[in-house]
Length: 215
Image (cartoon, rainbow, N blue to C red; front, side):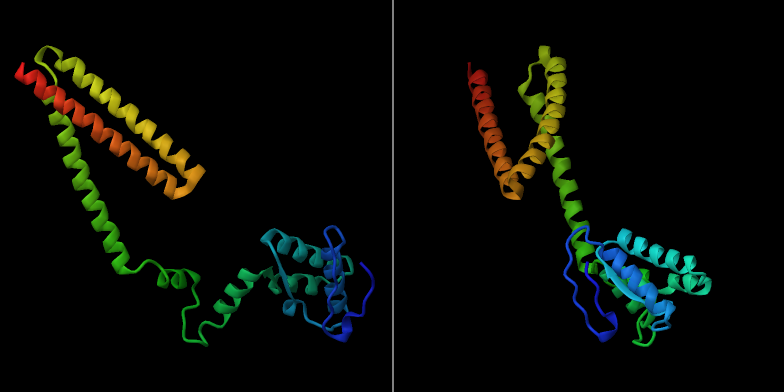
């Protein structure tokens, strides 16, 4: 990176990866602090990540300590060196009382949490799902006993629960795989195909049961 006069106002310095951007910023900010151009706690530097912000802050502090400016190095801890999100949060926190808002980030987060209607909708949906699941399980238990014969009831019930567990495992794996490959659309389409196949198979079982009953 070339030399530039940073005291002449806004300066734009194009630089690629590895060009020494962090070193340049650290050197310039340290120089301003040494020359009393800016107080350490009034430094404003915005980076992309918290890790980069921490590294920049530490470099500035180390540079000032190397020059014997201990008080200035300690004041760097109060400098505005962070990501853009961290800067926004700090400004909101520091000026919240003046705006008549809460200075607590936790309180601000709670205020923007789920609304009551969303919570009630979620609870109602879970209750409906639980009811349908209970009816479905009871129906399965009835059907396995209705279709089996007395001499095969133990084997058929055992096979049913084994097939039920295997089907749930296959369904979990298949739904996850189809969602990863084609998103929600493919997952729902696959579920519809499986439901249709189950309905066809159940219909054939019902027909066979009626034929067996009339013979």
